[in-house]
Image 1 (cartoon, rainbow, N blue to C red):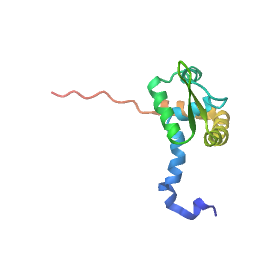
Image 2: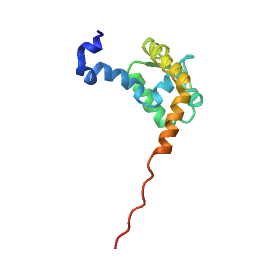
Image 3: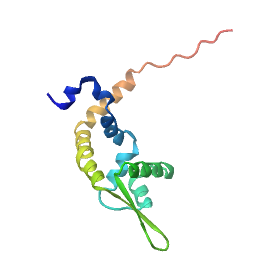
Image 4: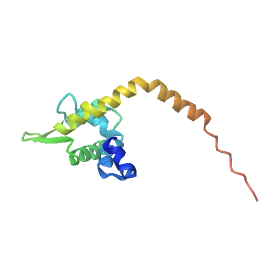
Length: 134
């Protein structure tokens, strides 16, 4: 029996489990982490590499990743100032471990996922127009 099975119902409310799942709960967090995998990058480089992310959302994402110890922010004493973001060892382990596994799983099952989503969309009941009464 695994540690998870020993705890039974306690696991659902386990703060450690929630802390782990929160790392991939935000849409852009894994995307930014993977964009930093090749090495340190400036904000503009991240926005270009990612595409489709607003400056505000990128700022929020970087703050969240910094707070979780997944990335470092390094300011270089230059004129003009230069700031780079890079994965920490913890962030690298997340990218190379769970995120890489999720990426492989997604590639392997993407056709099934898309088919299920399309079937659900086709079978979703259409809303009825409101009945007008006087």
